[in-house]
Each structure stands twice: as structure tokens, then as C-alpha cells.
Length: 437
Ligand code: FAD
Image 1 (tube, rainbow, N blue to C red):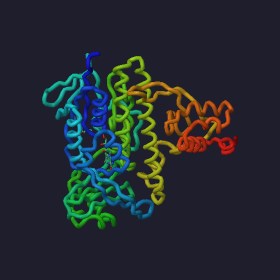
Image 2: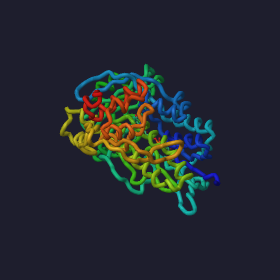
Image 3: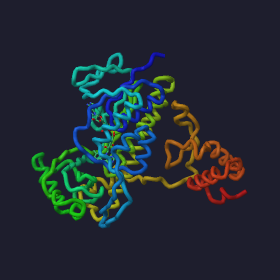
Image 4: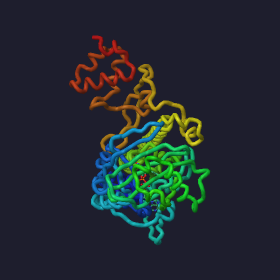
């Protein structure tokens, strides 16, 4: 087979993880991206750091992540949380390119002006260069053009303020406000970031934003604690849309959307980078299937689209529940809009053994998307294939055919048996069924 030309648009975490994953599968990949123009800091958890390392982006991390203590003012309570890691996004994005180059990916710096279809994809850059691709990965984040969105959250804007203060121990904090919420961070070298997230409607015009933000900071006890008086001087403001968006279609025969280009979540969940990685980590295998096994194209598309949609709903509900914890602001318009979006469905469905069923669904196996029998539950509608190395579908089938649970589990090693038994209990299988001989 002729080596396909794969071009990835955008070198954020999603584009970088997809490109490195494709290299690991043996493909030649070109990433084209412009570089981040504004200074930003984002907070990530230990779990995200592990995900980034796993994706081959360890170099970027070691240069750009620093641990910080974290405080939360929410629902009238003041909590000293365990630490979060602060990512200097300009440094991180710069180091992502170095990780890409180390992995053997060609990196082209340039702004994509348009993508023209016809005998493949033709990517035209601002400088007139044209890159042709047989397969296109859209990873331009929120800037990726959107043909249609399937779902959009309340229209939201984040105003990021940046200034230089005095050096000190790295720290971050989040607090709820009447019309939104603010996240703030101070880096060791004294760089200060304060970001307020609000309804997009009703904000002052561009010229009034800096003064508006100063007034909000002036009313915050956390700001007074974290920053020096410099916080009360108007700072440089950068406005970013932070509306939650799910793209209409995320994958076709010769293209795929990953990261924020597929779905972007509300920054309150603090999971943006995590969710962008989740869709990017599965993408190389989906692409491999589309290129090498066209007969499985529909299965591969189903796999990517369903997972993106499920991930979006999960993070949207996590965000909703976090907004809902702010009971002292119930009824205020900003909060009311978000405490009920996207729906009233609980984050986790109650277990129901009767609803547990075995179905054939797409999974990732040996570098390809394949259809296997999985166990579908109310809480895991896409199905669970393995648990601790044990295939669950045969276990459920045997129990359904009245074979005693002890007999079904007898061949399993101690830890496997313990985990499967616990999983059965969590699915609502009656205790006496699990223990009777
Ligand atoms: P991006 O990181 O946006 O990367 C897209 C890349 O494409 C960039 O390099 C860009 O320069 C490039 N690009 C765009 N257009 C073009 C073009 N036309 N031509 C060439 N290149 C182009 N996540 C967290 O985990 N923690 C947080 O604290 C957090 N805070 C956030 C605060 C706000 C206000 C917002 C909006 C988001 C926040 N996020 C946070 C989310 C996080 O930024 C994103 O989820 C993550 O960066 C998405 O990665 P990505 O690779 O999909 O896109």
C-alpha cells in the first residue's frame, strides 16, 4: 500500500498526542500549526500529567508544569485543597513541538488559511504554501471551523488578566462570584493570572474590560490574600470563548476531529486537557482502521463518534454538578442556566442487574477497531470488555444461564476474582447470588 500522507492541523495537546500515536503505528506525519500568541496558565491534576506522559509528551511537562497549593471558595465554604499543577501554556506548547520533533514528526509553523477538498485535502497556509493530505486530523482546538454543532452550552466568555507581581510560592485558587466564577494563580517568578468566567451577554465593551475586572478583584478576599497591590491596577485582558461545544460530526472516511475541535468543555471542570487527550489517544487506532481496513470504516467511525459524545455528556454533567454545589447562588441567572444544563440525568445511573446485557460493540484491539462482545450497563452504555484482564461478557452469560457464581469465578486468580465479584455487586447482582454455592 502507498504510504498515506497524514497532516495534523494544530499542535496543542490533542494534535501532538495524535501525531505521536500515529508515529508509533509507523506512519509519516506532518503537523502544521501556528504558535499560541497569548500568555496563559492552566491548572491540571496528577491524572492529566500521567496521561500526558503516556501520550509521549513528557518533555513538555517537565518544562512547563509546577506544583501549587490550591484554595477553593465555593458555596460559602473555604477549603484548602490538595495541590494542582500549573501549566505555563506558552512554554508547554513550545515544548510540545520539541516532543513532536523528537518523535520524528515534521512540524511546519504556519497559519492555516483554508482547506480545499478535491482529490484529497489541500491545506493552504498564510504564506501561500500548500500541503496535500490523504488523511486530515483537525486539532485546531476551539478555532477549528465548525460546520455544525450538535450541542452548545450556555454562551460563556473567560477574561484572562495577566500582570507581573512579586515572586512567591506558587499558588492557585477558585471562587464563585455573583455572575460567574474566578480562577487565579501566581507563579514562583511573580507572574500573576486572574480569569473570570461569565455569561457572554452583558459584558462591557473591549475598552471597559480591564477596569471592570479590577473592580471585581477589588471585592475579593482571595485576591487580597494571593496577590499584592498590583492586582488593583488594570491589567492586560485576553477574552476567550469558553462555551461548551460538541461538534456535529467528528469523523469521516478520510478525516477526524480530536480534542477541543471535537468537543470543548466548560473550564470549570478543570478537565479540558484531559478530555482533549482522551479523544486524541483513541484517534491513531481509529485512523489506522480507516486507512488499513476500509471494510471496518463504519465500526471505526461509530467508535470515535460515540466515545466523543459520551465523554462530552459526562464532562458536561460533572460541570453541572459542580455548579449545583453552589447552593448559595441558586436563582441567580448565571448559576441557574448552568445548574440545569445539559439535562437532569444523574452522572452515574443506579445499578440494575436486570438491565445488564451482552452486545457486540466496537473496541480497540491490536491497533485496530474491532467488534467484540462487551457488557452494556446503564452506567456504561458503550460497554465494558475487560476487567483486570477478565472478559466480562462470558461471565455475565454464564450467570444469566443460572450457573452458580462461584463456579463461574472458580478459574480466576485471587485478585481477579475479588475485582469481578465487586463489579458484579456494583451492577446490582444480589449479594446472596454472589455468595451462594
Ligand atoms: P489547543 O490547545 O487549543 O491547540 C490548538 C492548536 O491549533 C494551537 O496550537 C493553535 O495555535 C493552533 N491553531 C489554531 N488555529 C490555527 C490555524 N488556523 N492555523 C494553524 N494553527 C492553528 N484545561 C485544563 O485542563 N485546565 C484548565 O485550567 C483550563 N483552563 C481553560 C480556560 C479557558 C478560558 C479555556 C477556554 C480553556 C481552558 N482549558 C483548561 C481547556 C484547554 O485549554 C483545552 O481543552 C486544550 O488546550 C485543548 O487542546 P487541543 O489540542 O484540542 O487545542
